[in-house]
Amino acid sequence: MPLKVVLFDFNGVILDDEPIHEQLIQEVMLSENVRITPEDFQKFCLGRSDRACLQDLFNARGRVVSPDYIGKLLVQKTAAYQQRLQTLEALPLFADVESLIQTFQERQIKLGIVSGALRAEIEWVLERATLRDAFGPIVAAEDISTSKPSPEGYEKAIAQFNHLYPNLNLQPQDCLAIEDSFPGLEAARAARIPVVGVAHTYPFHMMQRRSNWAVDNLGQLEIPRLIQVFEGGEAASSTRSEEPVPAPQRG
Image (cartoon, rainbow, N blue to C red; front, side, top):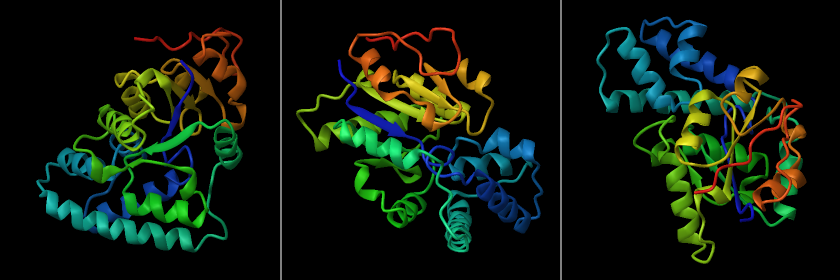
């Protein structure tokens, strides 16, 4: 089967903004008289929705907060996020992400986003980067009940593509996910979607152990060879490693 759809994570794959998120989460929690460490952020926040992150940070401190209260904190955080990005001379897009998107488009491969970020944040960035038209369905934090590593977001993305394109007959094995975090990799694999781990957040060797393919950066992703694997041709790796990477299992 050919590769039909590529599903991108957002933070840490398209936009290099994890340090901004960490600082803003620290500020939100500090306003609640809770100090968090880098280890807290890595454990509770990386690759997960902001709502799940804040909820678990409060739980870890023995604080009970309502979903509505967390919702108010998320509104504050989103406003601060947009203000922070507006102060930058240019959006911190990862190198090669725009050319990668263009390459997929030229090959008539549809694109979507599955992210724990809020829709307002994703849409705001894509509009300013003039990338919104490149993507079809976006599954954001508001669209799921359970954050990654749950496969819910990926399952909903497939359902949305099939709703928009009834003749696509999209199956998990027809997709490729691109993730930078452990929860993201686990979510894709739980959804039975082959996944590329890009070493933007964790070292290459740690991504390689958890993904079908691993790359140091998006520019290393060899699209022609990847497509051959999906079409049942060359079972080649698009990693920097010389060890062969198995083709995705079809089922």
